[in-house]
Length: 52
Length: 371
Image 1: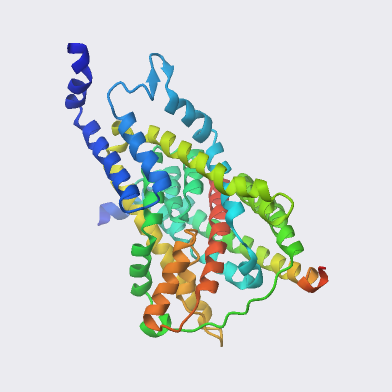
Image 2: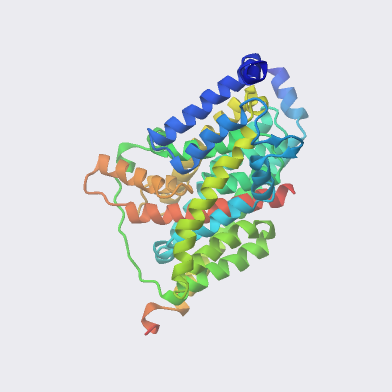
């Protein structure tokens, strides 16, 4: 167990993987929230009734 | 006589080749008999047999690259095939239900959790970060994105990643119910949701893919090849003046690319590359990713329910993976099992479409963070 934990501590890639979790997963939420806002704006500015 | 038997002798000397030929037969069996993603598994199965025959001419003809190698270099190495496939996928997607209920976009983001969970697990298992992220991207439940990202990151596990991505996508009806039932109660699965079918104008549908390209491009420019080709396909569908191009993209283009993609990805199915313990681990990590995607989506819906008066059926969260339309059908089937009158297919389908956008964004962000 101690060896395993040492291995984890020594793995230089773990901080990068955690960074990907925070910035990657978080980034997807940011992009999806922006798309959500865009969708709301599109629905507001281009309602179906305005089209012939 | 000796020349004629050369192939048989070489095959006997390398039993790994025989094992790979058996795997090729298994892939074709799964594709033909079980109808698991046959468009990919059948060409890939035969391709696996062809590349594992000793001194196979499909890889090298004398000192020149053979046809599979040429196709691989032209279509996968350059990342063109997965991108072209995205035009067809984009042309197939109707964003209407999602635009009518944009709130469901968030489930697409939540259900990408498996990608990041698996990346961390793979790093803990000793994979370098590029291979770990390539294993993680299997959980995007999106074959072309998996190929694009794994290839861009130079992963040596392309064959395993492709087999895992496509076979688990076909196994969504088996994998997802187990994961969903493990983290929901019967009462939660029976939650009914009111569907509000808001109308969406054609102008909004045309502007949607264009604005997505701009937004994704500004935040994660590396994702633009993926997002751009997907949205271009959708623009062909929605613009209303390119119906024949849209039909070609949905049918001829997708069919042609699927044939070529399935065949040439077999280049990575050579026994020396594929038959390793790491391959099994990659396959296991892919399965874990699919499970954790569903768990992530369900747990996110449960979290939202803590703050909402009108509760969400948490299974809709699990439909936020990219595997369309299997994931939404699975969710509807589970809802009907608990309450035959419960109809959540439209919400699940919208979350499923959101998953398609989120998976390409995830691929782009992973590349942006690593390249």
